[in-house]
Structure formats: structure tokens, C-alpha cells
Image (cartoon, rainbow, N blue to C red; front, top):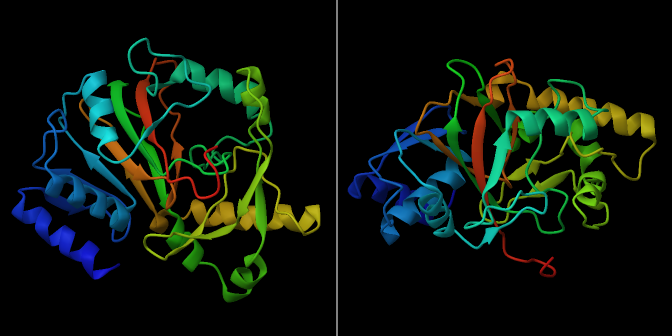
Length: 288
């Protein structure tokens, strides 16, 4: 981590923002800030620095309406409206993560994904994926419904040297066409490097979306499947994860370039609901 980032984290204490790590490299709880109010520049910079260091940060006991949710996310970049979003009359970028919608989506589009294997990143199907996501609890079961995030840098570093060498320079597909077509949009299949370099931290990131028909290009199909199985095993290792138990007023904010995540579906028929806002990244090639 750069000296500047470390200095921003040190300044967080001065700004009365408390950062409590949950795991050594992924996940931290931040307290001492009211997200319903406009952040000071120092608060904003400290939160962003914490996200770069811990990949995902959590806030408790926040009371946010839709407008405040959007205003907080907009402190960190332009808001992105997902094409499958059911439009909010006032705030288009708010995307409902509803249990009934998720179940229907998985039945229709994730037929080839085994339950428990749905580790993914958001909008990886885009040429320029969104960099951040802010997820807010709205309606929660009494117990269950946790979310797991994986430090994708640790997942890479945990690979054997031989496997790192095999993955070097390979690309993997991210195919979201079926969902986009059903929403009235067209977009090609995109391939991203299996191992990406995070442009702000310089870390190598093992970056595969298991929900979007991944295929590693340039190798035989059997080898592609074997490599994807190895990557999935890395994602499932507990020492690379942080698991967050939602409570009313909880908010999660993560770096979509540095982590993959998985929603635990263990709450039966409860109509669990969270709302997400995505933050656009800088257009590296074109504004797509």
C-alpha cells in the first residue's frame, strides 16, 4: 500500500472515524460517521483509503433513505444504472436485490451453476466494470442471509507457482447476454484477464465470475474446467474470506475490482431485500 494511502488511514483517527479490521486483509467496520450527512473531504478520503486496504467496509446503525444512499455513493464517483434495474421513479441507479427476484433469476439464468458456487463480481460483463458498490439493508430475516466477500488478491497469492504460471496471460469470458437480451439490450461477450492488476494498489487479482458462463480462452475445454475448479476452490477457502451478518441499518461498501462475493441463501421464503447502488469506473477504453 502506498505511503499516501497509509497516511489517509492515519488521518481517519483524527477525523473521529474508527476503523476496526475484521480479518487481516479483507473486511473492516467503520464507525464514527453518519452516512446520511454530507462527508467532509477528509472523511471521504479516509473511507476510500480503507476500501483500498480492506476491499470491503461495513457501517452499522445507519438510517438512510434513497436520496441519502445515492448521495453517499455519489461522493465516490458517477452512479451507474444497471440495465436490468427496475426503475426507481426518483433514483434510477437504485437496484433491488430481492429474494424473490434472485430466486427467479437463478432458476432462469444460472441453470448451469451449482448452488454454493455463485461467486461473482458485479458488472464484470462490461468492457469497463463498475469499481464500487454500496449495498443497504432494507428488509432482513431474523437470522441468516449473510454475505461473503473474498480477497481476490489473497486467492491469487495462495495459488501454487505452477498454477500462477499457467494462468498468466489467459483471458476468461463474462457472458451476460441472456439477461441483457431479456431486458431489451444487446452487448457482446467480454473477456477479461484471469489475473488482473489492480491499478491503484498494484495487487494481482484472481478475477472470475462463476455466474456468467466462464470459459478460459486459449486452452482445451477440459483444462478450462480444471482451472476454473481450482479458482473456485481458492474463493471458498475461509482464510481468504470475510462473512458479514446483516442487521437493520447495515451498509456494505466494496471495491468490485478487488473482491468477489457470494450471498448465503439460508433464510427460506423470507422476502429479504437489500438495495444496491453501483459506482462507475473511469472509462479506460471507451465510454461503454
